[in-house]
Image (cartoon, rainbow, N blue to C red; front, side, top):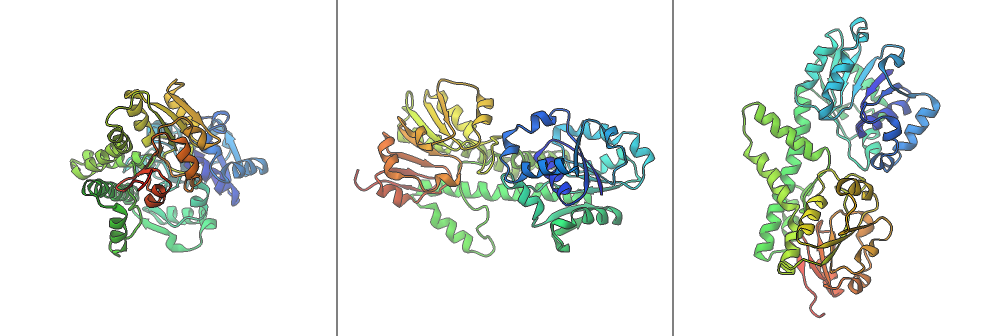
Amino acid sequence: MRVLLHGSELSAATAAAALAWVGHQVHWLLHEDAQWHVLSKEDWLRREPDLMTHIEQALANGTLKIIGALEQAQVAPDVVWLSLSPGQRAAANRLLKHPMFESHRGAVLINNSTFPVGETERLHAVMGSQHSRVALPDTLEEGRAWASFTRPARWLLGCDDAMGEQVTRELLRAFNRRSEVFQRMPCRAAELTKLAINGMLATRISYMNEIAGLADTLGVDVEHVRQGMGADTRIGFEYLYPGCGFGGPNFSRDLMRLADVQSASGRYSALLEQVMDINEQKKETLFRKLWSFFEGDLAGKTIAIWGAAFKPGTARIDHAPVLTLLEALWAQGANVRLHDPAAIPALRAAVGDRDDLVTFEGDPYQACEGADALMLVTEWKSYWNPDWHRLFSLLSAKLVLDGRNIFDPAFVASCGLRYRGIGRRADPTTL
């Protein structure tokens, strides 16, 4: 099929590469704010496993072409695929008002953008009723975007006519031939379902974080509680891990979009407000534990941080807990030595060059040299099994603050270190 794809988001880059990979002829019209000479250098794109390799291969063999204007597409597309951010709705309007779509009939508009509920219908009206519309909410996982697009567990397929469904199924047929992968529903239902899923996941995380806080107060190890809850088949273990808050460009944004939908419909959601408030509070959890340990005397202390990215496998720090944590530490006069294998450029762009921040991309132990304590913020796999004896020699206060509960408290304590997790703690019996 001939596909016109518009956008510069991760979802756009992944769709462009994947659709071209399976033989579709893709014309990729980048958003004006992120042209290829800029986008191709972005760390968050280059670090996605397999993605840049497939983009470069598709460009080389001609199935993918990057264009600067719609006229360069030369022929009318069978599919118009939109992968834009919420602030780029005007770009979608401009594209769909192009005279090409007035004279051309039978194209399918696939809205893969993070737009409000009902936007697919509105965009379809701009494009013209002679075309079909499909809402295909973005369900990519950052850090494994290529795998989640080319081996999907499901697609939320919002469409209101047979033509849109048939074309979309054929467009994506190469990635999963099982028909049940597509969950067909009306356009608005698909758009709301995507938001509702992320709202539920965020609610589970926030609830577990509240239980972890209660466990701390009561002197209970929250891991016992988590295991007991997860063993109940009505609950299960997914997204039942307490931590120091979630972030990311999509998860946080979807929660705010869902809250906006509630508000616009005249329905105030106290639950969503609480979920977002709890998450923001949890981003300060490690700081509060550190404050308590040092009895409020943090001026001049040096704190090592492992992890800045909002999740492992990505170079992004959008709404990441580390940003809140850094501001709190700096406000108390603490110095920070931070290691992250991917997100240092993004962090530097966000906070600038500061004398009270030293960053490292290579050796995480360099961040611990001269530090009083270590905070684990992002659970990169390279952090899971550190050299505890080396950390004991490096950390002057022998304190490890585990924001993701990835370490075994008893084992850390057996190495002579003090452990503070989210709803978990342990102290060495002898120092």
